[in-house]
Image 1 (spheres, rainbow, N blue to C red):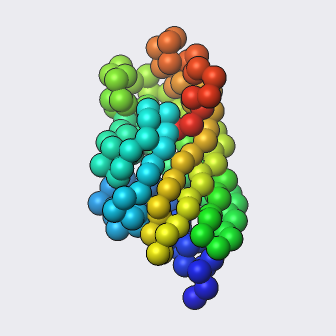
Image 2: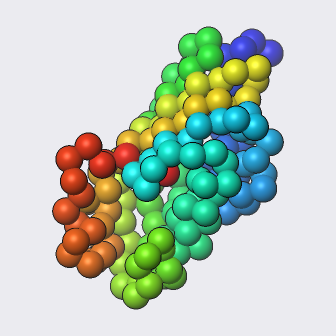
Length: 148
């Protein structure tokens, strides 16, 4: 298997684990010193795992791969992200039961076969409006469109 194929397979495993809400299945995909960036900040695996937990359990997030490009130690993925707000999500504790759908881009950099850096971009403001988050969350500040 080529390096590109192996990295694509790792990203596909990431998507499967995210859709299953299996945070512990994600852990071995990442380097121990991986940097994971998103709208609530950047940090190591345990920092991101709390957000991913809420995305799965509060927003019922699902990712569908629309396209993927791999070159050497980089993989970029265009995804359809869908979900429904049925439980607590970060500091929002009054679910509306509303659904959302948006396009997302996730970018992965690999080192020694593990994800060393990962960040995602999606329209967090559109997501907030679709789900009916409180008004303050619907006005995503410039440069804060990224999300875990």
